[in-house]
Length: 316
Image (cartoon, rainbow, N blue to C red; front, side, top):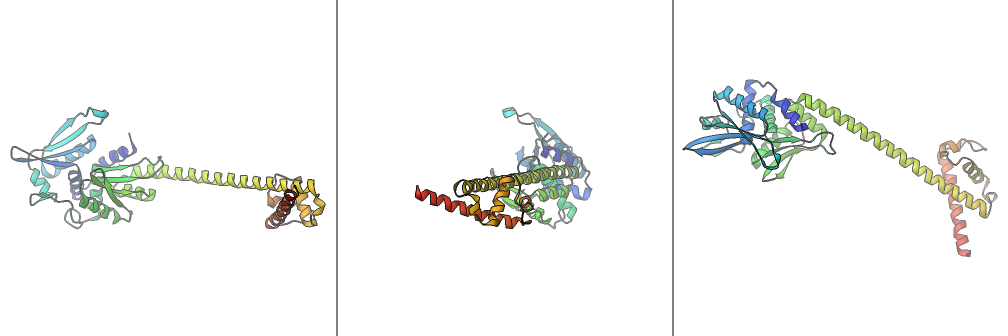
């Protein structure tokens, strides 16, 4: 089972207060419902690939409208797709849609004003977002390389409505076009966790946070290790260059040609090739020198060696 499926499974087990359940049902029907005319009667079909969501829709319709809708299962043969579960309402379709603010004046309303009787309370807005996620939402497994949560909507105005709802909670939701429709999406891991908590998926949120924290810690450790390795390589390369230059000076003109302070650093470096500059500074015979002091003298030695090399190149 995918992580998104686990989230939806948890959401379908929540017990929702009657005052808020209509908001969830509204989102489920608005996003997964379709209308058709059969024998001069309006028929409402609400379809989903998730049987638990289909049962939830069935129970909510029975609770609020005393409608014993039909549940139809269609098996998809192509590409081994999941079964399609359809909740069919042959009677009272207009009553249901009108009561939920979806259908009025013989047309579909693309959005419901926030503050209406269905969305007048914070708990109702949260329930609507839960229904929207159940109907058209998906979220990446936090173990993957990127964080992403989205809710798909057929209508642009409805998509804007979902975005506005999410941003009431400072989730930094964004919108874009997608596959003959629109999506509202979140990219920040913290905001995805906040959204899961917001719609009631507490256990899924805790699992998401556990995986995210472990992943972030692992990435931090890897960055530290890589940084340490880079620093070690940098030190090794610098040490190799210093030793090469000191040896070149020794073989051409001799270390005695260096000023006393540079000569003692050169001798110490040749005697302790693997040491860091800080460690090397403590071993200088005339007295300890700071890391920056050692580095300054080694740069002068390198400069002296490079001048010798240029002179030799010209003479040759």
